[in-house]
Length: 173
Image (cartoon, rainbow, N blue to C red):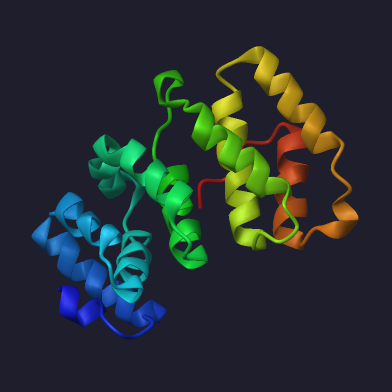
């Protein structure tokens, strides 16, 4: 499978075909090991394929949650970071999963104007969920979001802010 992911950017159709192969094989965790591949195309395409999985299928990656967090924290590949954050966002998070380094990363990236809007929105959604386990953090997070000057942000971030401030559940997908 690695060779098929190499040296090209997968479109949606190719990602769906690859996802079907992974789904039939059932080894999502084994396939997820490709997220750490030295070839940036392989890693990015593997992440793209995994985003096609259902939430139930992604549950198989929950034991790798902290590994996924580390990947998002440490990759310089903005596409791989966004796709990894998408996977993390779709996984269940518990109070025990709160890591200050990862929460700090999400809080920083959600406000950085140089961060791509999709990454900003995902970081905001994840930070919102993580802060929700601690009332004092949840209140501070809400004040931070309320204080953002949205005129500088793209629609993805503005929509996420509106959902958070309205108390609506922030969609997983």
